[in-house]
Image 1: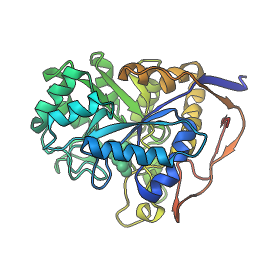
Image 2: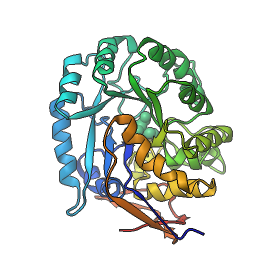
Image 3: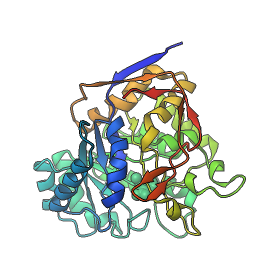
Length: 345
Ligand SMILES: NC(=O)N[C@@H](CC(=O)O)C(=O)O
Ligand SMILES: [Zn+2]
Ligand SMILES: [Zn+2]
């Protein structure tokens, strides 16, 4: 049995670091595990300009503990009014790595998102021209669409037509949750890839609803039936370069989750790699972990692979019930469980 595993240092291609006290509390967890991360722009107010992204990047860098090397990769929050010139300039100046499409109302702080994809046609054309990645929260928000179907319907109504219309555009279908999504990405051309979170590899919707309602298993897109989880596991562990790591770590204070109207988001940053590793080990795919965690993402984004290495040891790691986040408590993914690999350092 393998006792240690050494891989190229991974990156996180989708994370929420928040701002203020929460940023101070959570950044260390992501920086401990990852060399770089694509940082989501859904602050309040959202990061819609080059100046705001530059300032946010500085706040993140200032929150990285001494001695840790971590590079935040910034994203531009698209609205109905985003100017193509703003996106072009931010990309050219090395401030924006990608832009993010939130359908208005789809998730946390998406009220300023895009109400109709037709409204950002000129921005998307510019992005296709300059080779900038579009990150997509792929759910429709129509009242008549069941929440468990919102990803599949998004493919049909928005993503398929978009890709047919702009085949040059590089698209990351983020936090994939369904077999429909897996099939779509596999069948699409080289410009379409997807991130997969640890939670969608570990849990199905029962985790949220059996034996009581469990707000810490609630995130968006919502976890689906077991068949979908299995499709995601097959995709992640397949070795296909179209699928890569994106934690979607999304911290909310405990009381905001344990509420009559709880926030969507799972805080998985502290043990994200250990969590993914449990999946790859169980599915007999340890040799494909490095591709998923450290190679497919940078290759898709056209960025260099990291030079450093990280080592995991086969040792039990206890995940605490809660973590302190500057006065408020966060309940991490796998709270109270024991994972089987320990990340050195
Ligand atoms: N994933 C989530 O459930 N929540 C994210 C938003 C998002 O990624 O959709 C958040 O910012 O809290
Ligand atoms: Zn999202
Ligand atoms: Zn997210």
